[in-house]
Length: 145
Image 1 (cartoon, rainbow, N blue to C red):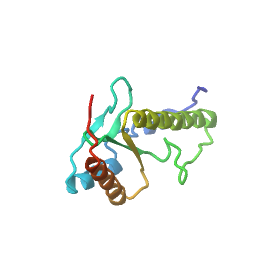
Image 2 (cartoon, rainbow, N blue to C red):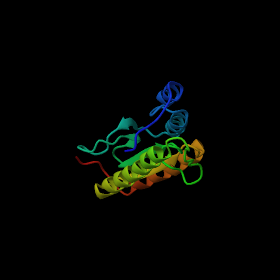
Image 3 (cartoon, rainbow, N blue to C red):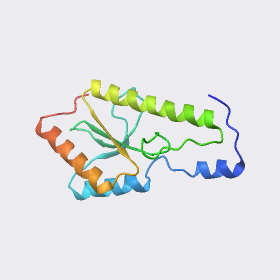
């Protein structure tokens, strides 16, 4: 990975970026809970794979990931920084590759991976997730380890 040239001010700002329990994630969880769904938070769906789902519906085998527009290269809102451009492009592309690999691994193990962008309306995203979880439960998906 290219070297990263930064300043103490930028380093301090970036260190404050939350990787979990973001406002969007909490709003989504509240809406799902209000809809009567129960779930696990920040769990690994697959043993031996070091990737956490933000919200996990174990018996239905649905893993929800709330992706930040910057960090995961949102097609609508991605920006490519001018400072350290090579570093950030490589970082974001690696994140995209890892996301695709995660989705593939989960699908191969019988899981449904759901991606929610941080710019999405939490209520609409929750409605989509509720439908998917109910559909999978009705289809008889069960968690076997």
